Amino acid sequence: MAEAKTEFAGTYVEIMSLPINKHVVAMCVNKDRVFWGTLDDEETIKVWDLNSDMPVQTLQMLTGEVNSLCVSGNQLFSGSNDNTIKVFNVETGKCLKTLEGHADWVNSVCVSGACPF
Image 1 (cartoon, helix red, strand yellow):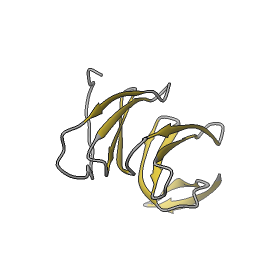
Image 2: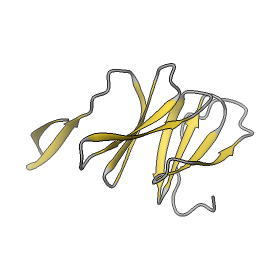
Image 3: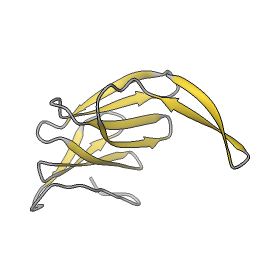
Image 4: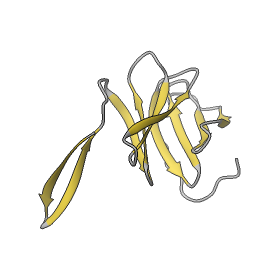
């Protein structure tokens, strides 16, 4: 991962560059992990470890491309164009729950606090 330091308002900020060669449609960062979904045929969420600078997981969406991502606690929430929100365990990558019933694509997900899944 290439890094550069840039001065912003008198403070130096590190800028990172991940090895992504596709159109990223959703990204979020939680502690030492970066989660991203790309616009492609894979229908997956990639997980990158910032400490080791290595990919650590690929989460399978099964259906639908990722439109949005949000991490809350130990859970990753993904909204997709299959009209669902999927809830994953951040550590194991296991899909804990699929929330169905939306009439159209889920374009934005925002979660605050613990969820009972």
